[in-house]
Amino acid sequence: MVLAALQPTPGMKCIRHLLLAFNAIFAFTGVILISVGSTVKNIYNDYATFLENRFFSPSIAIIAVGCLVFVVAVFGCYGAVKLSVAAISVYCLLLATIFTMEVVVSVIAYVMGDQIKYAISRTFNQTIQDYKYDPVAANAIDSLQNELYCCGIEGPDDWAAVIDSHSATEIVLPASCCAMYEKGNCIAIKLMGCLPQLQYLIDQSSLLLSSTVIMIALMQLLGVIFARKLGRQLREQKTERDRLRYEVTENIIKGSPYEYEKPITKPEYSRLPSYSESTEVNEKPIVP
Image 1 (cartoon, helix red, strand yellow):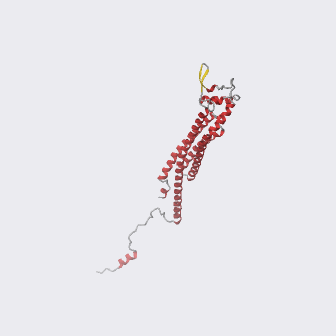
Image 2 (cartoon, rainbow, N blue to C red):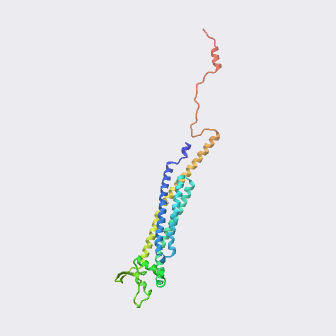
Image 3 (cartoon, helix red, strand yellow):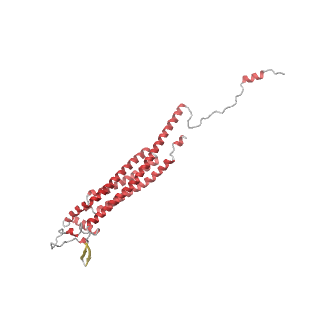
Protein backbone atom coordinates (compact mmCIF):
# COMPACT_ATOMS: atom_id res chain seq x y z
CA MET A 1 0.00 0.00 0.00
CA VAL A 2 2.91 2.38 0.64
CA LEU A 3 4.29 1.92 -2.87
CA ALA A 4 0.86 2.30 -4.40
CA ALA A 5 0.33 5.60 -2.62
CA LEU A 6 3.51 7.01 -4.18
CA GLN A 7 2.31 6.52 -7.77
CA PRO A 8 0.49 9.27 -9.76
CA THR A 9 -3.27 9.11 -9.41
CA PRO A 10 -5.49 8.73 -12.52
CA GLY A 11 -6.56 12.34 -12.15
CA MET A 12 -2.96 13.51 -12.13
CA LYS A 13 -2.18 11.43 -15.21
CA CYS A 14 -5.14 12.96 -17.03
CA ILE A 15 -4.10 16.51 -16.14
CA ARG A 16 -0.48 15.76 -17.09
CA HIS A 17 -1.53 14.50 -20.53
CA LEU A 18 -3.77 17.51 -21.05
CA LEU A 19 -0.92 19.82 -20.03
CA LEU A 20 1.41 18.09 -22.48
CA ALA A 21 -1.17 18.50 -25.25
CA PHE A 22 -1.67 22.18 -24.44
CA ASN A 23 2.09 22.75 -24.34
CA ALA A 24 2.39 21.26 -27.80
CA ILE A 25 -0.30 23.70 -28.94
CA PHE A 26 1.48 26.55 -27.13
CA ALA A 27 4.71 25.78 -28.94
CA PHE A 28 2.79 25.99 -32.22
CA THR A 29 1.15 29.28 -31.16
CA GLY A 30 4.61 30.65 -30.44
CA VAL A 31 5.50 29.96 -34.07
CA ILE A 32 2.23 31.65 -35.14
CA LEU A 33 3.06 34.75 -33.08
CA ILE A 34 6.51 34.95 -34.65
CA SER A 35 5.00 34.58 -38.15
CA VAL A 36 2.27 37.18 -37.60
CA GLY A 37 4.69 39.63 -35.99
CA SER A 38 7.18 39.21 -38.84
CA THR A 39 4.44 39.66 -41.47
CA VAL A 40 3.15 42.87 -39.88
CA LYS A 41 6.69 44.17 -39.46
CA ASN A 42 7.44 43.53 -43.14
CA ILE A 43 4.25 45.39 -44.13
CA TYR A 44 5.30 48.33 -41.99
CA ASN A 45 8.81 48.21 -43.46
CA ASP A 46 7.37 48.74 -46.95
CA TYR A 47 5.96 52.06 -45.76
CA ALA A 48 8.58 52.94 -43.17
CA THR A 49 9.03 56.39 -44.72
CA PHE A 50 5.52 57.34 -43.63
CA LEU A 51 5.51 55.65 -40.23
CA GLU A 52 7.17 56.63 -36.98
CA ASN A 53 9.42 54.14 -35.23
CA ARG A 54 6.98 53.67 -32.36
CA PHE A 55 4.50 51.96 -34.67
CA PHE A 56 6.97 49.10 -35.12
CA SER A 57 7.05 48.35 -31.37
CA PRO A 58 3.97 46.03 -31.17
CA SER A 59 5.16 43.76 -34.00
CA ILE A 60 8.67 43.52 -32.55
CA ALA A 61 7.23 42.81 -29.09
CA ILE A 62 5.02 40.03 -30.52
CA ILE A 63 8.04 38.38 -32.17
CA ALA A 64 9.86 38.43 -28.83
CA VAL A 65 6.80 37.06 -27.00
CA GLY A 66 6.47 34.28 -29.59
CA CYS A 67 10.07 33.18 -28.98
CA LEU A 68 9.45 33.26 -25.22
CA VAL A 69 6.22 31.23 -25.59
CA PHE A 70 8.07 28.51 -27.49
CA VAL A 71 10.78 28.24 -24.81
CA VAL A 72 8.25 28.25 -21.95
CA ALA A 73 6.17 25.55 -23.66
CA VAL A 74 9.21 23.27 -23.85
CA PHE A 75 9.92 23.97 -20.16
CA GLY A 76 6.29 23.16 -19.31
CA CYS A 77 6.55 19.80 -21.08
CA TYR A 78 9.62 18.99 -19.00
CA GLY A 79 7.80 19.86 -15.77
CA ALA A 80 4.76 17.78 -16.74
CA VAL A 81 6.84 14.71 -17.66
CA LYS A 82 9.01 14.89 -14.54
CA LEU A 83 6.07 15.81 -12.28
CA SER A 84 8.24 18.49 -10.66
CA VAL A 85 6.34 20.85 -8.36
CA ALA A 86 9.02 23.55 -8.69
CA ALA A 87 9.08 23.34 -12.50
CA ILE A 88 5.28 23.42 -12.73
CA SER A 89 5.12 26.44 -10.40
CA VAL A 90 7.74 28.36 -12.39
CA TYR A 91 5.98 27.40 -15.63
CA CYS A 92 2.66 28.66 -14.28
CA LEU A 93 4.24 31.98 -13.24
CA LEU A 94 5.93 32.44 -16.63
CA LEU A 95 2.72 31.64 -18.48
CA ALA A 96 0.77 34.17 -16.41
CA THR A 97 3.46 36.78 -17.14
CA ILE A 98 3.29 36.06 -20.88
CA PHE A 99 -0.52 36.32 -20.74
CA THR A 100 -0.21 39.79 -19.19
CA MET A 101 2.37 40.86 -21.77
CA GLU A 102 0.17 39.72 -24.65
CA VAL A 103 -2.85 41.62 -23.34
CA VAL A 104 -0.74 44.79 -22.94
CA VAL A 105 0.71 44.47 -26.46
CA SER A 106 -2.72 43.92 -28.02
CA VAL A 107 -4.10 47.01 -26.26
CA ILE A 108 -1.11 49.10 -27.40
CA ALA A 109 -1.53 47.89 -30.99
CA TYR A 110 -5.23 48.82 -30.91
CA VAL A 111 -4.55 52.27 -29.45
CA MET A 112 -1.83 52.98 -32.01
CA GLY A 113 -4.25 52.06 -34.78
CA ASP A 114 -6.37 55.07 -33.81
CA GLN A 115 -3.36 57.40 -33.80
CA ILE A 116 -1.91 56.27 -37.09
CA LYS A 117 -4.09 58.48 -39.31
CA TYR A 118 -2.64 61.70 -37.90
CA ALA A 119 0.92 60.36 -37.89
CA ILE A 120 0.72 59.22 -41.54
CA SER A 121 -0.89 62.50 -42.60
CA ARG A 122 1.91 64.50 -40.97
CA THR A 123 4.78 62.43 -42.35
CA PHE A 124 3.16 62.08 -45.79
CA ASN A 125 2.74 65.85 -46.10
CA GLN A 126 6.40 66.40 -45.19
CA THR A 127 7.52 63.72 -47.67
CA ILE A 128 5.50 65.32 -50.49
CA GLN A 129 7.22 68.64 -49.81
CA ASP A 130 10.59 66.89 -50.20
CA TYR A 131 9.55 65.16 -53.45
CA LYS A 132 11.52 67.52 -55.70
CA TYR A 133 14.69 67.52 -53.65
CA ASP A 134 15.01 64.07 -52.08
CA PRO A 135 15.25 61.05 -54.41
CA VAL A 136 14.52 58.70 -51.49
CA ALA A 137 11.28 60.52 -50.69
CA ALA A 138 10.31 60.61 -54.37
CA ASN A 139 10.90 56.88 -54.75
CA ALA A 140 8.89 56.12 -51.58
CA ILE A 141 5.90 58.18 -52.76
CA ASP A 142 5.97 56.73 -56.27
CA SER A 143 6.10 53.19 -54.88
CA LEU A 144 3.23 53.92 -52.49
CA GLN A 145 1.03 55.46 -55.20
CA ASN A 146 1.73 52.57 -57.59
CA GLU A 147 1.11 49.82 -55.02
CA LEU A 148 -2.03 51.31 -53.46
CA TYR A 149 -3.34 52.83 -56.71
CA CYS A 150 -3.71 56.28 -55.18
CA CYS A 151 -2.55 59.87 -55.63
CA GLY A 152 -1.71 62.43 -52.95
CA ILE A 153 -2.74 62.35 -49.29
CA GLU A 154 -6.48 62.88 -49.72
CA GLY A 155 -6.45 63.29 -53.50
CA PRO A 156 -4.57 64.80 -56.47
CA ASP A 157 -5.11 68.35 -55.17
CA ASP A 158 -2.44 67.72 -52.51
CA TRP A 159 0.19 68.06 -55.27
CA ALA A 160 -0.68 71.71 -55.88
CA ALA A 161 2.44 73.92 -55.85
CA VAL A 162 4.66 70.95 -55.13
CA ILE A 163 5.99 70.45 -58.67
CA ASP A 164 6.75 73.53 -60.79
CA SER A 165 4.18 74.21 -63.48
CA HIS A 166 3.89 76.71 -66.34
CA SER A 167 0.47 77.90 -65.21
CA ALA A 168 -0.75 79.14 -61.86
CA THR A 169 -3.95 77.13 -62.20
CA GLU A 170 -2.33 73.92 -63.44
CA ILE A 171 -1.37 71.12 -61.04
CA VAL A 172 1.55 69.02 -62.16
CA LEU A 173 1.29 65.44 -60.95
CA PRO A 174 4.01 62.80 -60.77
CA ALA A 175 3.85 59.94 -63.26
CA SER A 176 2.78 57.54 -60.49
CA CYS A 177 -0.56 59.40 -60.27
CA CYS A 178 -1.51 58.39 -63.78
CA ALA A 179 -4.13 55.66 -64.04
CA MET A 180 -4.16 55.14 -67.81
CA TYR A 181 -1.84 55.95 -70.69
CA GLU A 182 -2.64 56.27 -74.37
CA LYS A 183 0.14 56.78 -76.92
CA GLY A 184 2.48 57.82 -74.16
CA ASN A 185 0.12 60.41 -72.73
CA CYS A 186 -1.76 60.18 -69.46
CA ILE A 187 -5.49 60.25 -70.14
CA ALA A 188 -6.77 59.39 -66.63
CA ILE A 189 -5.49 59.99 -63.16
CA LYS A 190 -6.06 58.25 -59.85
CA LEU A 191 -8.62 60.07 -57.76
CA MET A 192 -8.34 58.10 -54.51
CA GLY A 193 -6.01 59.55 -51.88
CA CYS A 194 -3.26 57.40 -50.34
CA LEU A 195 -4.10 58.17 -46.72
CA PRO A 196 -7.38 56.15 -46.60
CA GLN A 197 -5.72 53.27 -48.43
CA LEU A 198 -2.68 53.17 -46.20
CA GLN A 199 -4.75 53.64 -43.06
CA TYR A 200 -6.96 50.69 -44.05
CA LEU A 201 -3.88 48.51 -44.61
CA ILE A 202 -2.36 49.46 -41.25
CA ASP A 203 -5.72 49.03 -39.45
CA GLN A 204 -6.10 45.52 -40.86
CA SER A 205 -2.56 44.65 -39.83
CA SER A 206 -3.20 45.95 -36.30
CA LEU A 207 -6.48 44.02 -36.14
CA LEU A 208 -4.73 40.84 -37.25
CA LEU A 209 -2.05 41.37 -34.62
CA SER A 210 -4.47 42.12 -31.78
CA SER A 211 -6.98 39.33 -32.56
CA THR A 212 -4.23 36.72 -32.90
CA VAL A 213 -2.67 37.72 -29.61
CA ILE A 214 -6.01 37.73 -27.75
CA MET A 215 -7.01 34.26 -29.01
CA ILE A 216 -3.66 32.79 -28.08
CA ALA A 217 -3.74 34.52 -24.68
CA LEU A 218 -7.12 32.92 -23.89
CA MET A 219 -5.71 29.49 -24.77
CA GLN A 220 -2.75 30.14 -22.52
CA LEU A 221 -5.11 31.05 -19.70
CA LEU A 222 -6.43 27.47 -19.85
CA GLY A 223 -2.84 26.29 -19.62
CA VAL A 224 -2.36 28.32 -16.45
CA ILE A 225 -5.45 26.67 -14.91
CA PHE A 226 -4.25 23.15 -15.77
CA ALA A 227 -0.74 23.91 -14.51
CA ARG A 228 -2.02 25.22 -11.18
CA LYS A 229 -4.28 22.19 -10.71
CA LEU A 230 -1.47 19.77 -11.52
CA GLY A 231 0.92 21.60 -9.20
CA ARG A 232 -1.61 21.52 -6.36
CA GLN A 233 -2.22 17.78 -6.77
CA LEU A 234 1.51 17.11 -6.95
CA ARG A 235 2.05 19.08 -3.75
CA GLU A 236 -0.73 17.19 -1.95
CA GLN A 237 0.61 13.83 -3.12
CA LYS A 238 4.15 14.63 -2.04
CA THR A 239 2.87 15.77 1.34
CA GLU A 240 1.06 12.44 1.73
CA ARG A 241 4.18 10.59 0.62
CA ASP A 242 6.30 12.38 3.23
CA ARG A 243 3.73 11.53 5.90
CA LEU A 244 3.79 7.83 4.95
CA ARG A 245 7.57 7.83 4.87
CA TYR A 246 7.69 9.35 8.35
CA GLU A 247 5.27 6.78 9.74
CA VAL A 248 7.17 3.90 8.14
CA THR A 249 10.44 5.20 9.60
CA GLU A 250 8.90 5.53 13.06
CA ASN A 251 7.53 1.99 12.91
CA ILE A 252 10.93 0.62 11.89
CA ILE A 253 12.65 2.43 14.74
CA LYS A 254 10.11 1.16 17.30
CA GLY A 255 10.39 -2.38 15.95
CA SER A 256 6.67 -2.74 15.41
CA PRO A 257 5.20 -4.05 12.22
CA TYR A 258 3.82 -1.59 9.63
CA GLU A 259 0.32 -0.54 10.36
CA TYR A 260 -0.43 -0.97 6.67
CA GLU A 261 0.24 -4.74 6.83
CA LYS A 262 -1.75 -7.36 8.68
CA PRO A 263 0.38 -8.61 11.61
CA ILE A 264 1.42 -12.26 11.50
CA THR A 265 -0.11 -14.28 14.39
CA LYS A 266 1.29 -17.57 15.68
CA PRO A 267 -0.98 -20.56 15.25
CA GLU A 268 -2.51 -21.95 18.45
CA TYR A 269 -1.69 -25.55 19.34
CA SER A 270 -3.52 -27.84 21.86
CA ARG A 271 -1.66 -28.14 25.20
CA LEU A 272 0.15 -31.48 25.74
CA PRO A 273 0.55 -32.97 29.24
CA SER A 274 3.93 -32.46 30.92
CA TYR A 275 6.31 -35.25 31.91
CA SER A 276 5.39 -35.07 35.61
CA GLU A 277 1.73 -35.29 34.82
CA SER A 278 2.27 -38.35 32.66
CA THR A 279 4.43 -39.99 35.40
CA GLU A 280 1.81 -39.47 38.04
CA VAL A 281 -0.73 -41.12 35.82
CA ASN A 282 1.53 -44.13 35.22
CA GLU A 283 2.42 -44.58 38.95
CA LYS A 284 -1.18 -45.01 40.07
CA PRO A 285 -1.82 -48.55 41.38
CA ILE A 286 -3.83 -50.80 39.23
CA VAL A 287 -6.96 -51.80 41.04
CA PRO A 288 -8.19 -55.23 40.08
